[in-house]
Each structure stands twice: as structure tokens, then as C-alpha cells.
Length: 80
Image 1: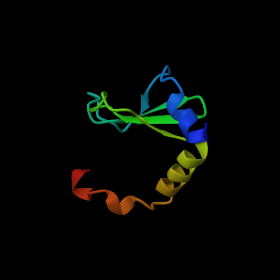
Image 2: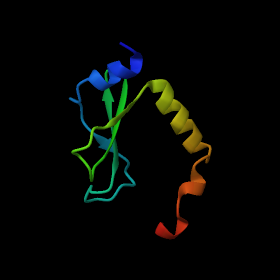
Image 3: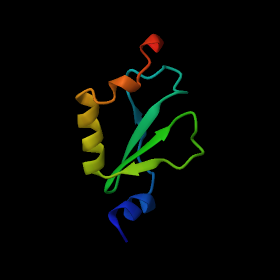
């Protein structure tokens, strides 16, 4: 099996975590869970959908790009 396929066979038996900037009622949160070989990512308002799963390399690349502001143009400033 490939590394990516292995991620999708990993059990979701950890604890979901969310940003401290998420809403307090938890209905609109991007959540992450450490799994064997990577991280699962889901949307709290759609718990019936299969979470996406990323390798540490993929998640690191995304986080570094976000920190560098590469996705800032996607945010509607009127919502903040």
C-alpha cells in the first residue's frame, strides 16, 4: 500500500483539536487529529463526511505557507 492509502486505513481513535480562534459553540470549526502516519482534518459542521488525511510533509508545507501569508487573499476581511 502507498503512504497515502495507509493514512486512510488508520483509525480515527484520537481526540479532535481545533483552533482557540474557533467559535465557542463548535459548529464551524476545522478540526485536526493526530493519526498513525499523519493528521486527519475535518469540518465540525459535517461530521458525517470522511476526514481528509495528510502526511507530516504535506501538513508542514501547508502550515508554513499559511504562516508566510500565501493564503491571506482567500480571507474576506469583512467577516473579522
